[in-house]
Image (cartoon, rainbow, N blue to C red; front, side):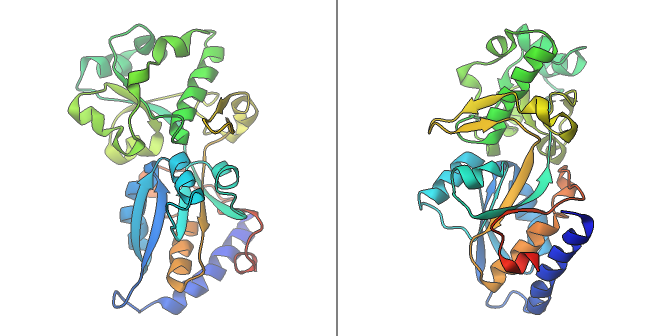
Length: 293
């Protein structure tokens, strides 16, 4: 979507929001919003301030969230996920909008010996590979952050000519829910964690950046990213690619429409460390006419 199209989409939606302005809090119906764990803080705080609609935000790993909707266990008005492919692969959504990007980093706790080793090492893989660092990550079966962690390690194995990297670094006891991952720093359970840049920025933790060939955040390296895959428990395959976040509106109520207008505007994401490109929102699929006029 070019810049003029982006402005047209936001202007169309903005007219609906304007019609609702001034209604205040009286009689507001809550808009149920199901979001990726990495969007929890941005949605609960900043997005809520950007809209007149009263939001009821629930955060889950994106794969889990998509399954809950597909199985009829949740019926949110708006869904925002950390991998737009899940809208088609699991939810069978007819359309969605891409609203932001992110990149992978290795956050660390500078107050622990293991975290200090991660921060000081010449190469970020060395302290992880040689022990002494407790590592945290998320479950790849439940959310994209988990399988993107595996993608980074697979790409790094090739990039650094270190084929045994993933086997040396990973163990079964490292996984935590996305919404609780960085809280493990406070309990001392982990020294370092594979996270999105936005998660580290929100919580003011230092982090090691990966080369753009590995961080899944640079569209210039999209072809390299696509060489890595992960098979989910249901048999579907997640493929590497530049990280993007998508959202879909699931009902046409006025409060949902005004809340979704704020989602598409994307300014609720930039203070939290997400990347919002000029091309966003990018619409895909059988998009409702109201969003394309």
